[in-house]
Amino acid sequence: MLKVLKLVIVASTLFASLAFVIQDDPAPAKSSKVNTVVIDAGHGGKDPGTRGRVTKEKDVALAVALELGRMIKEETPDVKVLYTRSTDVFIELGERSAFANRNNADLFISVHCNATPSSRSVRGTETFVMGLHKTQGNLDVAKRENSVILQETNYKQKYKGFDPNSPLAHIMLANYQSAFISSSLRLADLIEKKFQSVSDRESRGVKQAGFLVLWRCAMPAVLIETGFLSTPDEERYLGSEDGQREVAESIHQAFMAYKKDMDR
Image (cartoon, rainbow, N blue to C red; front, side, top):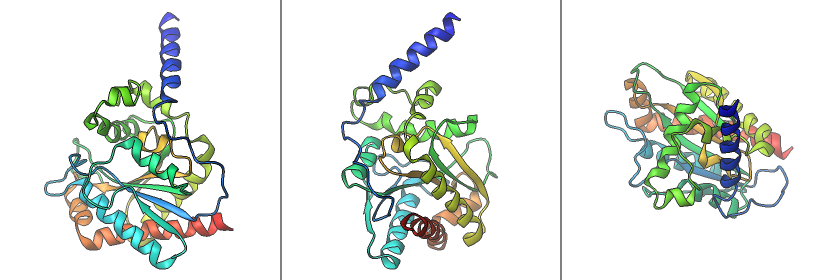
């Protein structure tokens, strides 16, 4: 009983401190129409992300993000497309969501690649929304993506002691984004279905976990793991221009279906 009480006290303290992590206030309430989308290429600069034999996550994520933005602008020129990064630079996790909030974005799409050290045969796509991880695998992905903060200056002060290796810390993050969970899940489901129908990819489904890059987004937000760089054939696919274009097209078609639904 005493152990449980201590856990609750620690959780409450962490929850309270996380509320002050990023100073940018969320954007005010707005209509559900999609007028501005922020596309976030994961990692960058000194942070390569996960690696394949010859491929780096930061490069694949940037290529897909730029191609996705190009497609959106070409088909829907009325939509404002913004990038958290358009070159190989390091952007702090907190700044990514803060950028989206400052620009009053209606949607936040973060592009990543997956990896697992335990197998060279695991493949498929996953799309995450902010929430409570239900499996160890979901937690492991969140831990890996959140560990980027270890490369930021004064991260302990900036994130009020958030420990990317602590399961408790990720549980606390699940309390955020609740206002946008329905729309986020809708987009995530569309993305996974389009990966299957457009590019015949294996979908590992829509999942929830605590991601720092999503938790302060004042709009629907998803994080897409486009495939496993640790699996040779997926690395070749994701490292190729055709593969990157196909991935972008799958996300683009999901975006168009989501925009049509929300605008209506």
